Length: 542
Ligand SMILES: Cc1cc2nc3c(=O)[nH]c(=O)nc-3n(C[C@H](O)[C@H](O)[C@H](O)COP(=O)(O)OP(=O)(O)OC[C@H]3O[C@@H](n4cnc5c(N)ncnc54)[C@H](O)[C@@H]3O)c2cc1C
Ligand SMILES: *[C@@H]1O[C@H](CO)[C@@H](O)[C@H](O)[C@H]1NC(C)=O
Ligand SMILES: *[C@@H]1O[C@H](CO)[C@@H](O)[C@H](O)[C@H]1NC(C)=O
Ligand SMILES: *[C@@H]1O[C@H](CO)[C@@H](O)[C@H](O)[C@H]1NC(C)=O
Ligand SMILES: *[C@@H]1O[C@H](CO)[C@@H](O)[C@H](O)[C@H]1NC(C)=O
Ligand SMILES: *[C@@H]1O[C@H](CO)[C@@H](O)[C@H](O)[C@H]1NC(C)=O
Image (tube, rainbow, N blue to C red):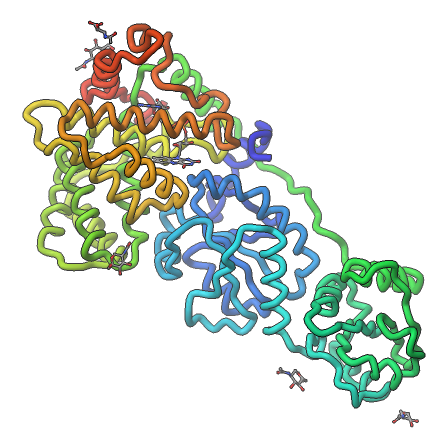
């Protein structure tokens, strides 16, 4: 799905007007998918005031796993449009700066994370985990929660008790607000959910209320013969008919009831509509195309904008998302800041900023992600000039939405750091950059599957045994090639930037001759990732 997004979608994404906080940002979902985008300002109000059950997906737009899950989640959300009367679906992108707070408050430690919130959610707690990404399991777990949490005059999952007769059964379905003209009765044997699922399946039909019957004697009370006691429909005058179905499944039951309702001229609510008019701006699209063609023409080039974006996102989004930072993860935080303090391509103010953060962390015993965000903010206030001016990716720009970007810039940053650390006078001990990267992946990286793969690879490739600067550069190069190899052909691959064994022969003819020539590769990497050679292209307005 993602890989076939046409240009028009790009235009749509680039162009939505700025007025809405969510507009103008790429988003994996929209209301045409039956998914509402929520953020720090809106999530809690939605959860508190929507009288439905709520399903929320917390994601990171840059996480490949989240992007691969997107078409599955869309299919689930579209399918569950039929539950609109009882279930609302939201998505929160934890990769957006304004959502750092809400993702920290809800303790999102991995993405994608699915949580269910009951209709009566009042703001306490972080919701109930839906611990699966399988569509059928998600739907089944939600059905269980909804059946447990919902008990209104319009929607009852509680079985009818055997002492009911026609009059008492009808009594439940009269009065203000009731839209039903028919009552369907479904026999639900012990251990089965067929009644529950038939209720949910028929939510689009306001003309029918489905009641669960767990004791077939009720059918006798209502006047049905013993061989007709599985599925029946009754009108409000008490006239009852048994319905025959070929199969004992909620779909077959719902289809039988729907067919009866159709004969009576009762129709379902309209299905999810799919059309939305895009706003189009060709200006940013053109600028993007210009960057893209320049980048593709210069495969050797590493761009300052990408390195800076990576540091910006680390300081303002990835690190502040942590809950409590103490012990090992405080050490990890100190290591990242220390590496960045020594080697970064930021302006003078940027170097002051990192030194300031570094010095403040020395005396801290513990802090929260929120306090770290405040620390960064307070240090930035003391500066005379803005540090982070690159507001877009350049070398990490993509030819399609949702690809490349932050993870690409992280690789770029860490390669840059290994090369910088190898230059005299060697401010950092050999291995410091890899150790900082490892700590980041272990404690902070919002891309859960990236982190898990990286940690496994680090153990297998003995990351801790790297003891000189040149080996550090080469370790990361080889590791990155292993990841490229694994992801080649994946749906998250940008066809204009295929996953190759880096560098290509035509970019460095001496690097490979049947086998890699490591000293040539080293020379090449030191060359392209050298701080003197970072390109300013795209850093400012074009
Ligand atoms: C630590 C880490 C682990 C990840 N694990 C996963 C994962 O498990 N699953 C997943 O789906 N995604 C993972 N990702 C994301 C994935 O690796 C890519 O970043 C993403 O798919 C975008 O790819 P890209 O085309 O921009 O190139 P990237 O792989 O991001 O590379 C960025 C740039 O680095 C340069 N480069 C490429 N290879 C090398 C090399 N060997 N040495 C030096 N420079 C090189 C190229 O200029 C390239 O454009 C991970 C990212 C990181 C940082
Ligand atoms: C559900 O609602 C009905 C009618 O208001 C009530 O009699 C019943 O006790 C409720 N069941 C539960 C489990 O709250
Ligand atoms: C049901 O109600 C009708 C009319 O209100 C009454 O005539 C009838 O006797 C009642 N039946 C039972 C079983 O209570
Ligand atoms: C950091 O470590 C502390 C103590 O082990 C733990 O409570 C906390 O959740 C960790 N935070 C992160 C971001 O891993
Ligand atoms: C690698 O390249 C260097 C210089 O180009 C050359 O001297 C050396 O023999 C090569 N090593 C191998 C293993 O091919
Ligand atoms: C920068 O790149 C050029 C050409 O690619 C190279 O000749 C030069 O040595 C590089 N500079 C440094 C400091 O590595």
